[in-house]
Image (cartoon, rainbow, N blue to C red):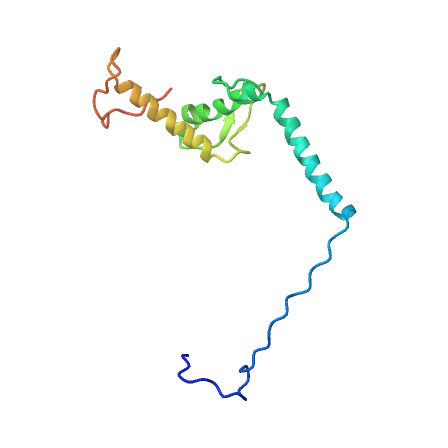
Amino acid sequence: MVATRPAPADAPGAQVEAATPPPARPRRPWWERLEIWTGAAIVVACCVFVLFQLQPDLLLRNTTTAGGDTGAHVWWPAFLRDHLLPQGRIAGWAPDWYAGFPAGQFYFPFPALRASGRGIRLRARLARTKPGTGAVRGRGDDLPLLQG
């Protein structure tokens, strides 16, 4: 609402008192701030320790990751692509490793499906290239997806 004339002197809110600043908070004693600074120093020390244990010069090097369970993360999309997807399944029994195990039961399948799809598209692209030239022969829409 737009006021077109000044409010009467006896109207509520016409007389605005000067606002007083809020009272200043008392400064906390040093021993209460010590806990915060000690916690922050411990977190920073732990981060620096972990960083140096990981050897930053090796982290930034252009190398191939090999170790731990990296091979299992390559195996699962390949098994999915080669054995389960042709049967129309995303989970099943893998005969590898001793008496076998239920592959795809305990992990979310979308990352493995995405990796399998990328591998299939890459193989199809490589199949369309002319040997020795790297030139693509055609769009390859008529080529079947490679298996195996």
